[in-house]
Length: 227
Image 1 (cartoon, rainbow, N blue to C red):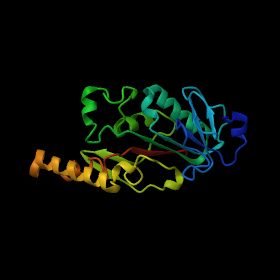
Image 2: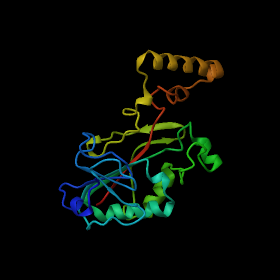
Image 3: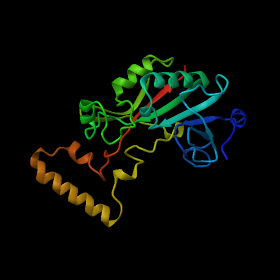
């Protein structure tokens, strides 16, 4: 059975995972986190429509994390969620977000199309410039970016995952490495096929963004800190 907001408000420390489904306590990756979701899938969770304000007092939350949720919202709703995070966070605390990065070489074509044909439920095609624009319209003003694609290159800055775990990153997502002989063989076949198609035009980016390579799955990861 999901928690009530009264039970959640009494927790100390209080940490929230927005739109996660099941990333919450007692999972060791999400200590003391409560999942806030329209369809929660874990006992340490609460059912809530995040297009509406959180029924919590100001400055009561120690930390917020949200992974691959914002892309399902429209721009106005994203700004409103940022504002609500700012309201409930304690001063000096942060909200960590991860969203798909549509400047990833495998997804850039979606920007030309204006939509993602694989994921029609993605309302916005998130990129660093778009996130900067939306954050600038929120009380946070600026974001601290950790992972993002720029000019065909992956920019990777250190992340302290003790401040918020993200699953879809080069070091955490299992699709970024091969394990077992079947996956190793699949990786070799794909690599040979890529070389046969592109020959010497095959670049490190071509190689690294294929399945079972390190940059096959990345996220646009950024922190919003309440000063």
